[in-house]
Image 1 (cartoon, one colour):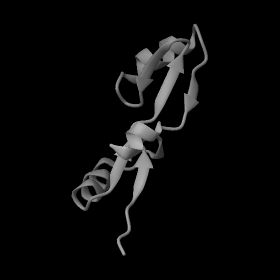
Image 2 (cartoon, rainbow, N blue to C red):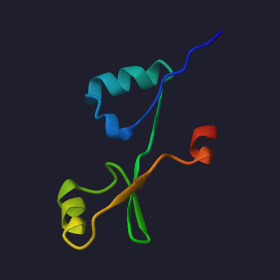
Image 3 (tube, helix red, strand yellow):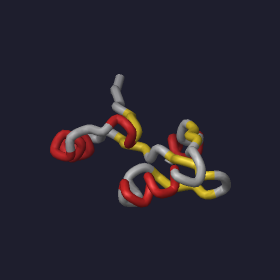
Image 4 (cartoon, one colour):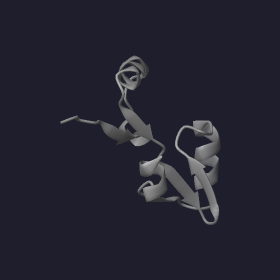
Length: 71
């Protein structure tokens, strides 16, 4: 029996722990924010840009899709 660790980027692991877990086979899935029809992955834009977007629209979120899990 094998055990897999799967989390998403919103867990905010320290960088060194994240890298260690990745080398041991853990999977970290992207967490997505939606601003209307625009979508961006967590940590894909600078925080200042993310905050600027919230001045115009509050983001919604969703769990990663089944396709991302199967990847």
